[in-house]
Length: 180
Image 1: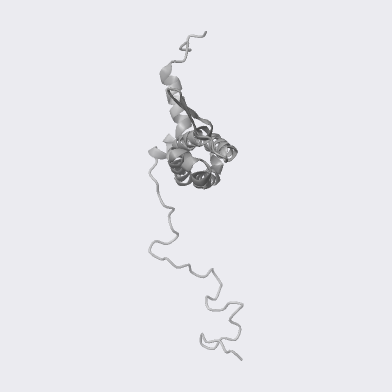
Image 2 (image 1 turned 90 degrees about the vertical axis):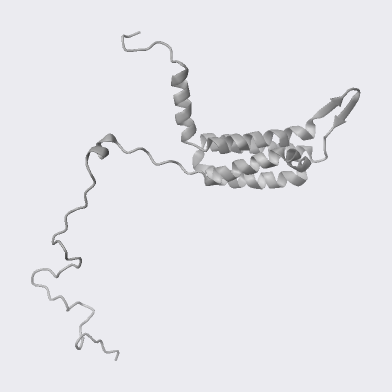
């Protein structure tokens, strides 16, 4: 190890790295979408044991529920790792959440539906932040370029050019064109 190294990287280093990673993508949208897919995929295959009574919540559309849940988890991960397609992933998450209502036990007993709906809406509305300006930009005040002549907002003709004669006004009579 060199004299400049600090040894092992502590908790604050990894926390700041995670915060930087989280801030550059729709993190909460991906998390809500991912969490919304879990109950949608789980509840159709769950068995609840109450003493000697087993309550199976499996439906005939269990495969559809599994597909919807896996797709929502995949869309949540896509929002994290490919944030360029966040709008597509958000719209797809909202559509899958709506489809999960009739297919998957009322959208995972509304829990998965609401989480996926919220995640899709957050994904659509998220935009990347502006990059910070370099420190050199803060030192120099912003100045507009100097005009050639102060106070004259209109351009003037060049030297040796007649201002009223152009190629399109060949037969102008006092500024009026004839139509025939």
